Structures are given as C-alpha cells and as structure tokens.
Amino acid sequence: MTEKKPAYMRTEDWIERQIREARERGAFDNLEGAGKPLRGLNRTFTAEEWARDWIQRSGGDLQALLPPLLLLRKERAALLEALPTFASEKELRDTIEDFNHRLLDQYRRPMDGPLIAVGVLDADETVAQWEAVRPEPEPEPEPGPPAPRPTLVSRLRRRFRAGPRP
Image (cartoon, rainbow, N blue to C red):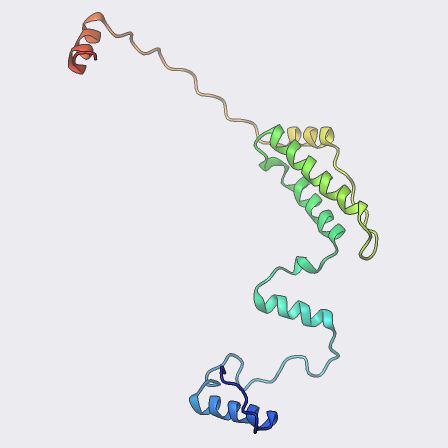
C-alpha cells in the first residue's frame, strides 16, 4: 500500500478498494486465526490487559510491567538463591555492591506506585551465607615427580639442531 489516495476519491471508498484488491491478490489467505472467533469479546477490556496480551504475542518479557521495586525484590531473592553459583568472594561482593547501589538509587527517586520494602544486602552476612552453602572446592591434584633435568649432551644436541646464533 504505497500509493497515495487520489484527491477525487473519498477516503472510505479508497480503503475499501485497497481491501478488495488485497483480497483478490490472496493477501488474507491462510492467516493465523482465520475463521476463529476473536478472544475476549464477552469481557470488559482494559489497557493493562491489552499491553499484557501484546507483550505476550510479541514474545516480550512481562516483567517490564512490574514496578521497579518489585523487580528489585525478585532480583534479591534470585541472588540469594544463586549463592552457590558464585565462583569467588570478589565476584559476590561486586554483585552485592551493584544491587545495593541500584536499590538505593531507586529509593531516591519519586515513587511510581506503592512502596515495596526491599532490604539492602549486607555484604559480610551474604558472604558468610555463601561460604556455608558453596560446594567444597575440588582438591588440587598432587604434583607429579619433577621433570628430569636435561643432560649436557641433550642440551648440546638441541643447540646444534637450532643452528648458529645470530
């Protein structure tokens, strides 16, 4: 539909013509949901429901509709559940510092809805929990016998094969 509406034609007639030509070309054949009733026509409709349905149809994340503090509360719970997956104390402390920074930043902003209590993570307590739940590190393998020291003859052979030095 790249052509412009002719000035002499009514908008309604032009739209009807576009639909008729598209139908004749087969543009409406085999569409998803063709011949099926529209969902939700018997219930009231809200903008929130429309946004939720649109996000689901588009394959988006519904978490974007949640208030920021609720998202941070869920993130805090997920972080505490994922404690055993942290490889080092430094990585855990950096993650906690980033989380606390974003949480306090959100509390400093004007509220966009109800106040949701989200606690700041104490780094020392969380590290203690991490140490209690983390899996035991695998013991380092015992060192094998030291490699034999090259003899004078083998060192001379290697030097001879390498050629003269520049």
